[in-house]
Image 1 (spheres, rainbow, N blue to C red):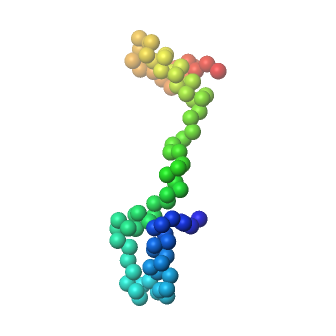
Image 2 (image 1 turned 90 degrees about the horizontal axis):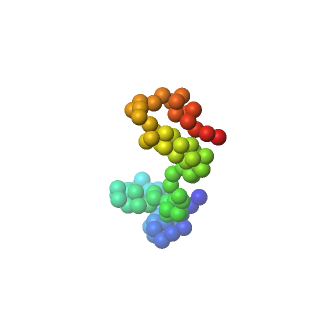
Image 3 (image 1 turned 120 degrees about the vertical axis):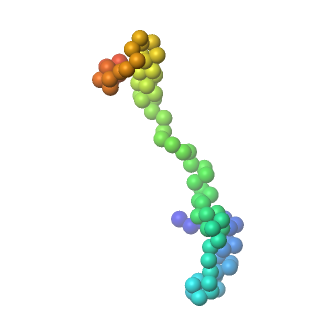
Length: 85
């Protein structure tokens, strides 16, 4: 997947007629390199894991149990037994 934005076109114009970037002493400056490597299409993607209704409901049940309990320590088995469904 190639870039088709203004920055990519500018870089292309600068190197299109070169046969060897090493001979031309072409280098990326750090800020330019990172700017170019950022994929503008990724900005539109949602970050993180999709929300699971099942997990959210289970965690709500566990939080409710913990908040309303007199205990201060819970085993994983005890918490798993509190999940209904």
